[in-house]
Amino acid sequence: MLPVANRVLLGLAGLVLVAVGGAVLAAGAGLDVPSWWPWSGPSDVLLSDADRARWRSEGWWWPVVIGVLALVLLLALWWLLAQLRRARLAEILVDSGDGEGAVLRGRALEEAMRGEAESMAGVSRAAVALTGRRRTAPGARVLLHLEAHASPEEVLSGLADGVLGNARTSTGLAALPAEARLRASRHRAQRVS
Image 1 (cartoon, rainbow, N blue to C red):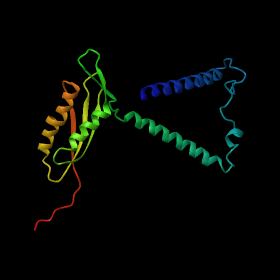
Image 2 (cartoon, helix red, strand yellow):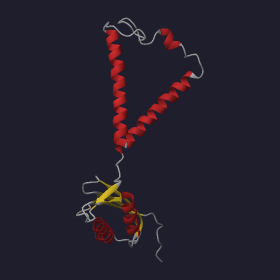
Image 3 (tube, one colour):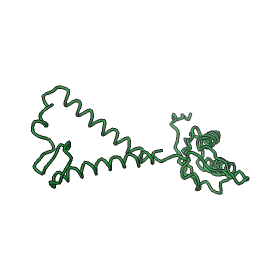
């Protein structure tokens, strides 16, 4: 849905900018513009001195201007962050053997992989996110929080052979490339006596 919203918003903004810019350019060049248009010739200004100073003495003017500009800035930052966020894979096409195929929800597979990863020895918490496209080979990003006594080598081999192997087998995928990040869980230092 985000790409559709991007195209619609960018298209509307482009149309508004082209229309207003073209009309101002036409008025500035001395061409005929509609009678309702506020600028009718090259000597007209966008804002007169009276228009610019009209609201300055009002107590509500500057808080409203600053509030609207802050809201526009926050919306622009939200939109930028939404563009940079990596999209999660919503569903995976699974070959069911009948020629039709089946659709597996991405969140369901993520939850199954997360549960299996958390059940491994030495893993306190896990997070899994599927990436890629629906019709091509998906990938996985796995974040594992290791306990103090965990062996990273054993955890990685369990992840590759167990969790990722079971996910490949259950979905019928030929490959499931994964990026695994291991982090040590915070724990208190143990005293040796």
